[in-house]
Image 1: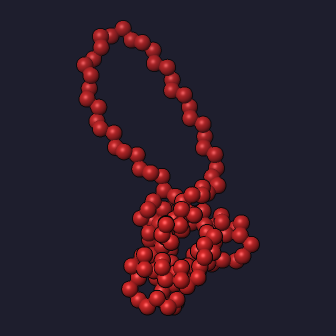
Image 2: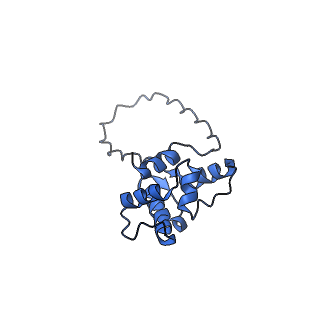
Image 3: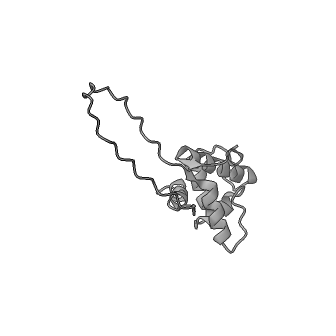
Length: 137
């Protein structure tokens, strides 16, 4: 599995703690009528339901609050990888950079790491994650 795939699975596989939803109310019974049946009206096509987005920020914030280390996952690819339980070594980051199409030097520079963090956040958003704009720009 790809490095990005493991990051995505680590985040998307978790559910952020949510408040319980209100129970649905049962539909009211319809009283029969004595009128003649009307001709059937064509029903409009039903649009497919979009998949619910995964709140990436909420999940990562929850993980950070449960973690004993102070990890700056909002800006650091190293800390983000640590937070989701992955190896954040230079070798892993180089492989991730190649997967995501980084064209600069694969030397672990600040430039590479900043690019990687933003690229990971953009890819999470493309794959159904709800990611704040300040984490992708």
